[in-house]
Image 1 (cartoon, rainbow, N blue to C red):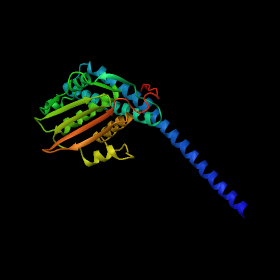
Image 2: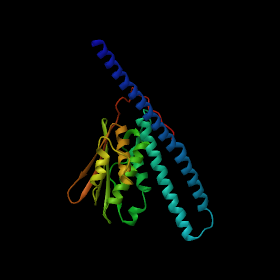
Image 3: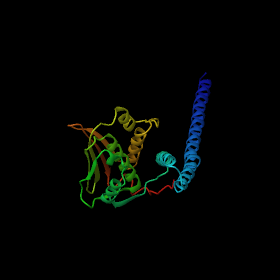
Image 4: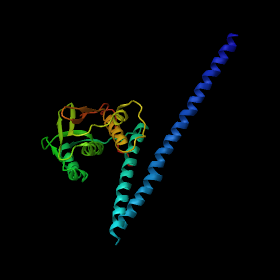
Length: 259
């Protein structure tokens, strides 16, 4: 009887291991298929669509048609931006290192982002004020930090009251770099907070829910953290902290994935 039990136990273990390997292989294949679909099918077709819209912009068309072309162009570029960010997230989670960390002047980046921010802050008569000194050293992936800042500033603009100000502060030392974006207006919703901070988020929220989630992912790549604070007088803050030297920075060779 003991021999039969041993064989039965071995069979059960073998079956479980076999099913696990089979499931893992299936999930890996599905992930690769999803990444390739984003990278080739969707991304390439969007790039072709954007090039076509750029050509149409130079043609003589009616005012209404021109407005439609412009709206389609904005929508296409937004979709392309989302695809690129999702590709970075999934490639990183697929053990493809995408960080290209270097030392750069954050103040130059901040001024550039503020100057290129959406025209919506002009429509709401919002002032964006960068309070920090002209040179602040930061060690991180510049492209990721730029995207994080664009998302957080855009979210602050949308949520801020009309005729108000958004304040950006930054400090750095040998150990960490900290950015705070402060505004007066609506807080981010409980749903957006949940999407950002739950342990197993899902890419199902449209708009800034998924953008904030991707923003959080980019921060995680740097072993950093983000806090969302609701202060007095209906003011709110995004506080981002990133170590100046990420974990395993010496041991790992970071490379850029062209996507």
